[in-house]
Amino acid sequence: MGADVVFFQRPFPSANSILIKDEKTILVDTGFGSDIARTEQLLRQFEVEPSELDLIINTHYHSDHVGGNHYFQKIYGTSIAAHKWEADLINYKDPEACSAEWLDQPVEPYRVNKILLDQDKINTGASTFEVLHTPGHTLGHISLYEPEQQLLICGDLFHYKDVGWLNIFREGVNSLGRSIESLDKLAQLNIKIAYPGHGIAIDEPLAMIDMARTRLEKWIGQPEKIYWHAAKRIFSFSLIIRNGIEKNAIEDYLMECGWFHDFARNAFHEQPKDFVKVLLDEMLRSGAARWQGDILTATAPYEIPDKYWSPENIKPRDW
Image 1 (cartoon, rainbow, N blue to C red):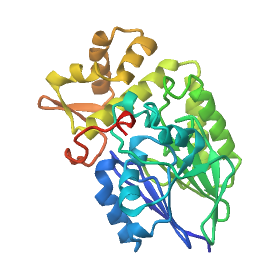
Image 2: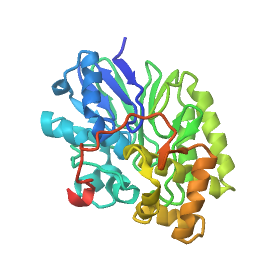
Image 3: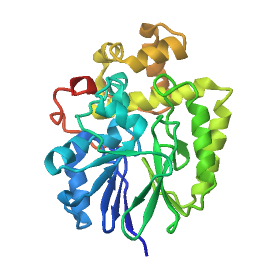
Image 4: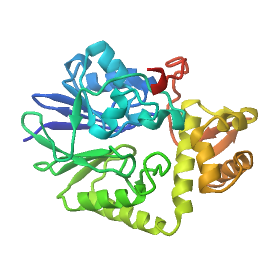
């Protein structure tokens, strides 16, 4: 029969979570830090007490995937597993860890206890999941594959009719090429169902892999599409975790963000102050954001984070 695998589709700011119930109980990705009560509720809904978790596995280290790590590790002593390339940054408390400083996204401290590498095997009892290093969205991004059920957990490598945004400034200029290589790697597998980091479960995963690859190939000669796809996703997430930003505060906020300066100067060759209007116009034109009175808000569905969950806006430099 194999392990029971439960897919939790979650609204922003959290990524989806996947619960593996077997002799060992594993949670893949813990959501955003403000959403921990909901994470515990989802576990209990399927008769798993948070204290019973044997392991947390992170597909990658962005805040929407690792935000609950601190709580589970502090309260329950849960072990956390991640790819070595990201685990090292986490455990060394490197300011670049989680890209949190650059993205201006809070992440509370945690440690990685189990280092994962490509082709590692994770036995849960009735099932064995293979770790697949699938870089692109981040350098240490992993997927998990269970061959008996032909089940793939793919993180943010691809979603239903979408791809994860690419960070050429922090994850390397060849993020695009690495993403294509990772998709090619997955295309060799027999997959019946894929559970992505955002959006719905995918019951035609090979078709979605092919669609994602086609989209990325088109971007090879159109780098501005890579830039806009990423910049809009990042700014949308900033709006989500703040439940909007007042009109008169937007420029000051953006001028404090590393990602904004990199896109302005190095991607679009604009002075940052001039790029504020360019970005706002594109957010509104594309439908990624809208005005609600004098507050700019994201249009993606999301649950409003508790503004008091992390008042210090903690980053790895503070760990």
